[in-house]
Amino acid sequence: MVTKKSFYITTPIYYVNDAPHIGHAYTTLACDTMARYKRLNDYDVKFLTGTDEHGQKVDKAAAAAGMDPKAFVDKVSQTFVHLAKEMAVINDDFIRTTEPRHIKAAQHLWNELIKRGEIYLGGYAGWYAVRDEAFYVESDLIDGKAPTGAPVEWVTEPSYFFKLSAWQDKLLEFYEQNPDFIQPESRRNEVISFVKGGLLDLSVSRTSFKWGVPVPNDPDHVMYVWLDALTNYITALGYPDTNSDDYQKFWPESVHVVGKDILRFHAVYWPAFMMAAGLTPPKKIYAHGWWTVDGVKMSKSLGNAINPIELIDTFGLDAVRYFLLREVSFGQDGDFSRQAMINRYNSDLANAYGNLVQRVLSFIYKQCEGKVPEHGELTVSDQALLTEAEALPPLLEKDMDHFAFHKYAEHIWQVIFKANQYVDDQKPWGLKVTDPARMQTILYILAETIRKIAFMTQPILPIASAQILDQLAVKNRDLEAFSEALKPGTLLPEPKGVFPRWQEAK
Ligand code: ME8
Image 1 (cartoon, rainbow, N blue to C red):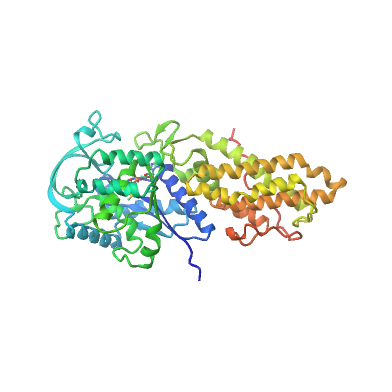
Image 2: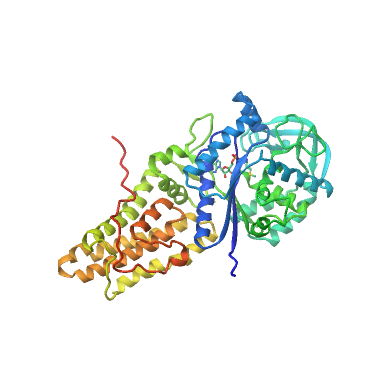
């Protein structure tokens, strides 16, 4: 039996202090697209997302809502579950850090760190930013605020510390030996210089509130929310049982996709915690960029956060997926504006892809008795277009290896533009009377090209790709069937337009 290659991809687990916006949707969509792509390529995939439900930030949000924290997190976590459904995300698990399986895993990791002498009891006196759930030293502060702009408060309390300072050299060695661990490269350099700058021991428990995983054997303390939260990635694989099938199969192939805001927690703290507990760190951390709206940071106080569900209701799911993944290169910052969304929709989806599919399939339906056309001998131009489409899988594989979703789309759209050009050059409509056989050949070439394109758009545009493949009567949609050409004479259903042009209501 041939064993499949495995792939484990995770989103950050989102804080349930507030409703999700397009920033959260972005990470989840990128992971879903990657997971769909890997499944298409016959990988055994596990895709994890979930919610981060402990800590002071969530505790305060519950208090502000006048709710008991547990009732509050039960309610808000559902908005993230709901968003994943609305975005047609195929996640294999949804983890909540208040679940017993997770509390057990986090406490087990804590005990391991204690057992190995990696945690000691001391006292914390310093700055804390609840919004970032992060500790800061005086020299980090800019105008009395955290470097992120978050307000800080002075905290003095008994605290357990993780001996992070002892892991500086081992972390640097780890980055050296695993050059692909942090992606993209520019982020890797940032992390390395941060670690080279020296690491302080990290406070890993709090005593001034109760909403967290209780520290084993010391009920006055709850675990620092980041130590609790990062553990989610292995809880979902069955930790503490590292011999479980899932742990064995998926952990060596783990990729954490995160926003650049939380790279340090993932690329410094997390591998240090894992090595200190005698575990192997994840395989890769990919940090993507930051979305603003009309050039401004999204925030509750400004009330400018874009609700992804409203966006989907307006433009459709595929359009939102396409815009977010195509508009900026993954890793770079991006700006959302309604006009940019409309422009992208009309130029790439309605005018290019939708128009190609609509004009070709409706012509075939009317002029070829609703059947896949017959083809005669192929000309150089016919062959050229087919070759372009055939070349997509290896090209796109490279793009996905680099998380270059925008390039993935760009490469497909180059073929779409060429196919539209081919229609304009070959003018099949004019051949109906003069050369019907040649008309059929041209239409066959186009149908085949559209089939190949639709195979490859599946990870980004799951709904439209399925409709197009339905309209071409294609059954097997895994990449292994990419080379199975359409059979002339196959009956086709009546085509329906996939991306009608967007017009602003007057
Ligand atoms: O940090 N642009 O949760 P969080 C792009 N619970 N991505 C954005 C974004 C924006 N404007 N805003 C949010 C936490 N994101 C922790 C994570 S993991 C063990 C614990 C995305 O709710 C991006 O992925 O603040 C970012 O890293 C994440 O949401 C932060 O979500």
